[in-house]
Image 1 (tube, rainbow over the protein chains, first blue to last red):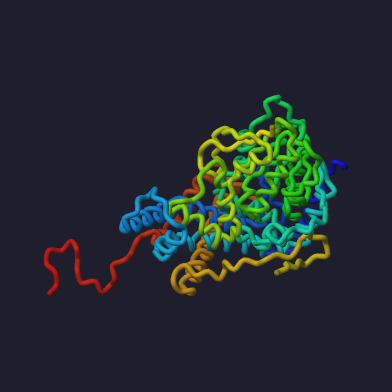
Image 2: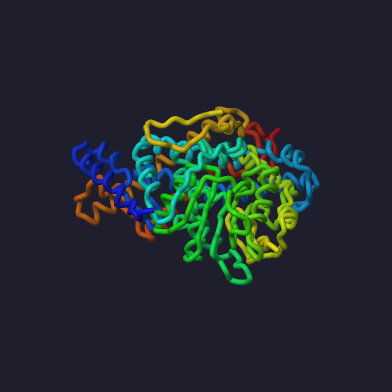
Length: 392
Length: 122
C-alpha cells in the first residue's frame, strides 16, 4: 500500500476551491471554504464557521442535558417516588417505573431536550455534509487508496439487526456514506460532551486495557470499531503490534481508515461481523469491544463472545466495555427511566436485550477466566473496575 | 426499509436500513408544544452562531485595525482562553433559554390562596 499523503491529495481540491473562492462573491467564498478550515490537532474543522458554531451550541445543550437538567429530573423523580413510598435505591418493575415517571412535565422535558438535541445535530450534519457530497466522497476515495494501513470492503451483507438508525443517527452505521463524519461530530457534541476531540477518552481507555501476563502483544483486534478511535489508540499504545478494527458498517470503517491515515497510523480496517470475524483460531493477543454489546441482539452477543474465545490465543485478553460490563443492569425506577429513553427514544433497539445477557457467564462458557481490571471511567460506563476475560 | 441517495456518482458502500420513528415522538402532551421546543433550540443555535461570529469579527477588527476578510473570520481558531470564556458564555445562554423546563410548576393561575399572606381572600 503506497503511503500517500491524504491531506496533500485533498489539498488539490482545496486549491481549486481557493481559486473559485477568489472569483466568487462574498457569500460564495464562504461556502467554498470546504476543508480549508484545517484541523485542530486531530480534529478536522467543519467546512463553515456557522456549522461549527451550531454544533457548539449543541455541545452546550448536551452539557445542560447531562448536568443541570438531569439533576433536576432526578430530583423530581425522587420526589415522585417518595410520594409513592418508594426509596431511591428500591428495585421496581420496568413498566411500573416508566408509567410512574414518564408523564411528569419535568421528566418529560428532560427526555424531550435529549431527543431534540440528537435530532437537530444529526439533521444539521446530514444536510450540510450532503450539500458537499461529492467533495467528501472524493476525500474518502483518496483515503481508500492511501496508507499507512488499509481498508477492506468485503461486500458484507449486514444482518438486519445492524441496519438500524442507532442513537437516531440518520441511516445508522450502514445507510449514509457520511456515517463516520456524523458519528465523530455527533458524539463529541453529545454523549462525550466535548471530551474526545483528540480521542482523549479512547486513549485513556486503551491505557486501561490489561496486557497478557507473558507481556506479548503482537496482534490486537477491536470489535465494533466504529470510527476506529480505540483501534488507533491501541496502535499508539502498542506501536509494533498489528492492529485491526472491524465493524458491520462499511461507511464507518471507511471513515476510520481516513482518520487513521490522517494520524499516520498503520491500522487495518474491514467491514466484518464481530460474530464472524474470518480470522484464524488463536490469532490475537488482545481483543477489545467498546460500547458494542448494547448495539447487538442477545443472540449476536453470545455468538460474539464465542467468536472472541475462538480468535484469542491462550493467555490472550478480552476487554469489553459497555454500559453494564461488570456492573448491574438497571433495577431502580430512575435507572429504568434512563434506559427506557435510550432504548425507545434514542433508538437503541437492543439496549434492553443487552441488559438481559450475562456477559461474564458467556465469557466463561467460551473458555475465559474472569477477573476485575483497572478502574475505568469511560463516559458510558459507571466508574469502577471493568471485567477482563483471559483465555485459558 | 429506507435508502439514502447521494448527489454523486462515486461509490458510497451503503445499504438500506430500518428507519427510526423517533421524530414522531410527543413528550410534552401536544405535538405543537414539542415542535415549539425544537424551534427554540434551533433558534438558540442560530443566535449562538451569530454571536460567535460577532466575537470573532470584533477580535479580528481590533487585532488588524479593521482589515478583515471573510476568509479570516471563517478560518479563525479561538485561543484556549477564548474557548473557555466563550464556552461559559454559551452555557449561560443555553441555561437562560431552557431553565424553565427544569422547574416544577404546578400552581394554576386561578389559584386564590397566597401561602405567605396572612389574610386569605373572602
